[in-house]
Length: 185
Image (tube, rainbow, N blue to C red; front, side, top):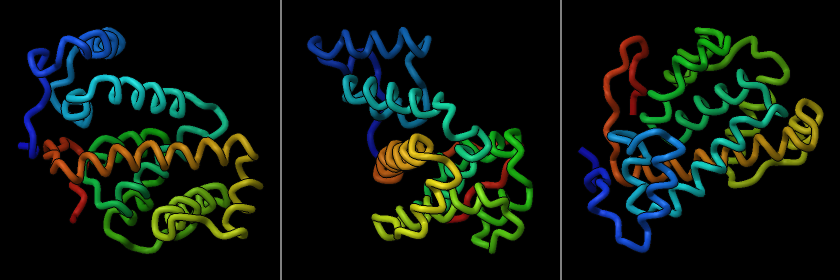
């Protein structure tokens, strides 16, 4: 159980009902689990964050495989078990190598990454650990992904960091995954 109950339609004030309804209409239903089941206590925030998340995830300047690699790196760096739960299997489907997924989970060295993969991992780790990136790391990301792709990378990290902070602060429980080991925290 999270630190606060998941939102129900009765929890939302009349002034925020339109934002909740718009979110539910886009998603198809009121979420019964996950970060938005918490964030919908502030429906306008949830709606705006979801719009940003979907926009970034649909951005073609950073390939899906690299986005999933970034998600796993962020989950590990932030010890966010829910993001790990939501993305580990997807990363494998997007062709992130099994040994890379397993080594990120276990905090082991990542061997044999391609140049773009290494650039994405280094950029993510550096931004999360230092709250900024060095010029050499920025230059490698820019060379790999271009200006637009580096903006996408930065904002992907930022968006999912917001989600991770919420999931961690509210101690969102992670369901058991049928195929993936849980993130050890």
